[in-house]
Length: 263
Image 1 (tube, rainbow, N blue to C red):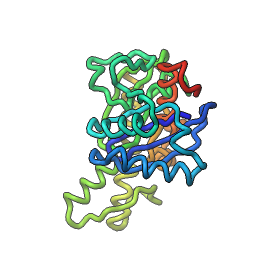
Image 2 (image 1 turned 135 degrees about the vertical axis):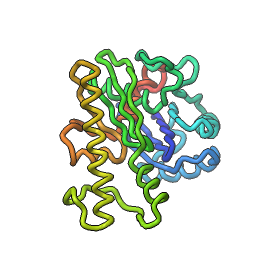
Image 3 (image 1 turned 90 degrees about the vertical axis):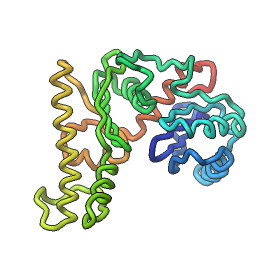
Image 4 (image 1 turned 90 degrees about the horizontal axis):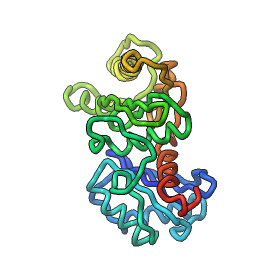
């Protein structure tokens, strides 16, 4: 089986995929550059056994995508020491995404954005916009042939909420949910409306501008933990796929190591 690791700024997702490409286990842990390979394997091994009866011996391939360079050493060591495989690392020399990167500085594009673009292309075709609701809210353009053609980076919803709470002494922390009406009658509903409908407006406004500039029809797929609730506020999110990154990692692994694990 394949172990796919997606280390984001906030959380790291571990997923195991069986030989027919089915995700048979998925777990999330807070991203910490200080966490060691030993800590990872104790945590992961327990969850693998509890959720499906799997063990480290079942893993025959590892692929890693990270936007936190400090976390890469421990994750790579985890693969080598405990799974006894050389990990495939997105962005490493010789790793081919299978698609062209049509931007001015390809080396600056986050691994997560590229992997999402590959996952979107192999699953849905194109051209399209991939909107990822993570630590940042990103809009990425995938051409018909799968090429990555740039995008937009905006602050994530949770970052905006934290900034609002930190900068204004009387504003509390709130949960993100769709308010019953736009005009709030007290502080919390006012904040919920500003955050929820504000980000719906961000989505709709940026998508309209991207489509006008691109000059061709673009379908839209959303991913990330907040894609599902925000999809209730707009018709633009035609598809929500929380496994998009995992699908991209599987496709990239298959492209680079076709003689390895058959996923």
